[in-house]
Length: 192
Image (cartoon, rainbow, N blue to C red; front, side, top):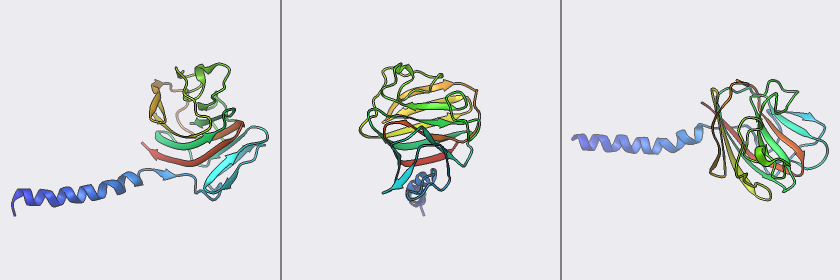
């Protein structure tokens, strides 16, 4: 068999295997039917219906992951009302105190009085300018944490490019609802 005939079957096998590997890289952390794998903090109520977890009334509340993560790529698909105050908190110091000082807060807050750390920013670490708007539509956010480097992409636009901070090395992450309506339908993570 000539060399060309041996290479083609090998390339075909790689091409067929590649999509399966790409899909397998991420672990879904939300099953679309329950809050299994999560702990609720705060007094607000989260509910699951039609593959979506949401909160829209009551006091501030968080969904905190049962797992703890160091280096990862986290993908979330979310919908918020225009008046929502939400966020994704990563590498939290614990599971009971969720704040911008105990975690890194990747903000989802279009109406933040000081837009410096509004939607797409990491509060206190990496400002965003101009601030994108997320209200009233489904959005895709990718958060990458590798060592002391953090980056955020919102709807294909890089809002934080390799910010450096070593305050928080590892911990759970949390989804926040502080005001307005907040919905999540995809939450998946890939260790790096």
